[in-house]
Length: 128
Image (cartoon, rainbow, N blue to C red; front, top):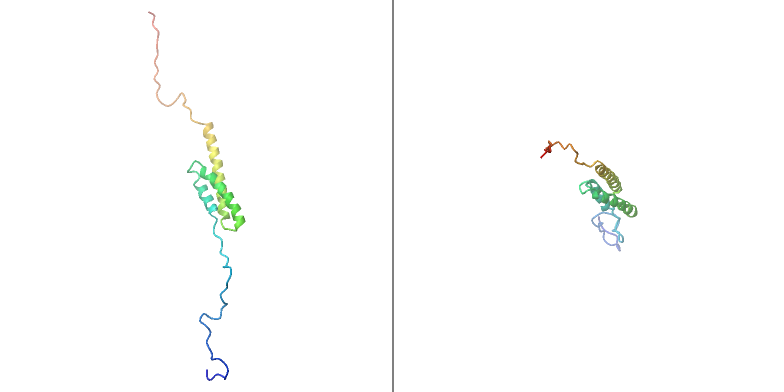
């Protein structure tokens, strides 16, 4: 530029960084909530529930219901995992109870025919 008119300050270029909005103060931007840990625990326990005599399946169902209530309250993700944990855990529990019942009804009892040859002795009484 050439000469400035008298009484005006000299020209200064804008600060680096452009003409954006000034920095905002106050609350930070809302962060997206993560996945609910109880939903993850529900799915994992239900998938491996058959390993520990179906205790994991029972824990998976319990954790699933707890996770659903927490997700409804907090808005976290993981609703599908919680439902899957409940469904898989329930199916495993029903199968476990059915197998246990069948095993109790049809338990193996030794029969007369065990497959081994029988040794029989015949005793004949002799008059004396």
